[in-house]
Amino acid sequence: QVQLVESGGGSVQAGGSLRLSCVASGFDYSRNCAGWFRQTPGKEREGVAAIYAGRNIRYDDNAVRGRITISQDNAKNTVYLQMNRLKPDATAVYCCAAEIWGRWSLVLAVDQYRWWGQGTQVTVSS
Image (tube, rainbow, N blue to C red; front, side, top):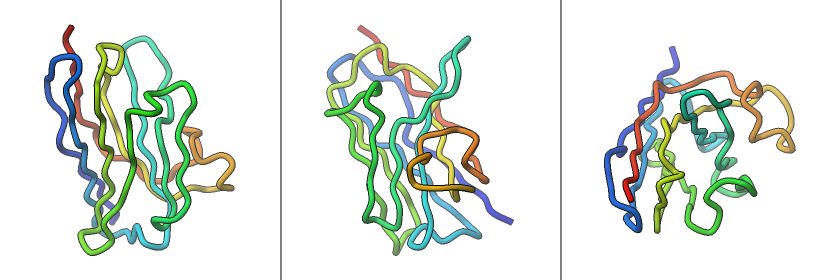
């Protein structure tokens, strides 16, 4: 049974930073793909960043590029999303996902992932 558990969300003021974590059980990040997605009410879930085996990384061009960094710690089987200089438009529920069905070129697509966490709320106030 695969389980993904996110943490690190919270409320911050604009300009602040947060580091989200996603710990996996029953799943090995070192040999698979993981991604971070976000969703706001009334909008589609969108891909933010993805990482494969700690080597290949992709960021969404429309997301908070330049202010986010995805990384992983294989010893802790954890994937991170570091978010800096946050703006109010980053407010969303952030979810991690693991193991894609298809190709790396589709790694930021919601329907490509097999496993999902429950999400963690990020709120950025102005």
